[in-house]
Length: 268
Ligand code: SF4
Image 1 (cartoon, rainbow, N blue to C red):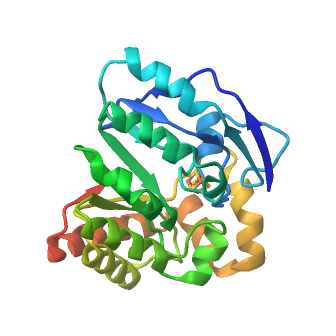
Image 2 (image 1 turned 45 degrees about the vertical axis):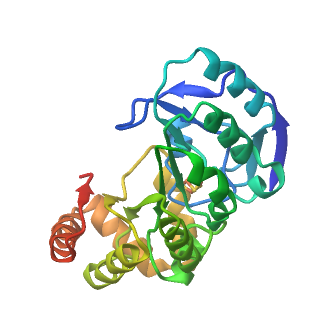
């Protein structure tokens, strides 16, 4: 992993995402290295290093944030949107933790989203916010597939344990099930996954399908063809031949959530 310390001009960016007024990304790049990551297309990343192989560490972001919160209008801060705030380098740099301290001093509302159990480290700070929520992305319960798709992230079971720990400590939690990848998720697996996140304490779920973002399939296909060719074929049928997989997953998800009485938002 290439790790570079950089300085940043700003800490908070205006957000166009529902429910978020600002976004805060302490890192550029992400060591979780998910093969389906949409961040490169969102950022129009065209740098020399492969996505997932580098992290730019915004070493001065807590100081920049401290200045900004003095003048910015109060609003919900999303942590993070194009990186994972609890990716492995956070253990060393603790930038997310330092930023949380700055936000806590103003008691700004926060919405954290992660695939890492490291978030539990900051439970002491998270508990102190009046208005906070933590979302965990869980795309599969299958450790092998998670290892292929999200090689640097916490194992699914560790994410569920972290979700439960946070819920048990009075922190509002939810789950994002996405992207749903054909061949990895189906009706039965979705039933188990949704039941498990609900059991762990998620108050609601959001679900989305795999989408074709610029450059995405070019990154995914060679990895899937080498490590899980059956999944690559299932994705191709769904993405390029409209074989109905996404529609079936959508109606399965709606029915399962209804049966579980689990509030859900289907993003397609
Ligand atoms: S955790 Fe999020 S930002 Fe990081 S690589 Fe995965 S999808 Fe991208």
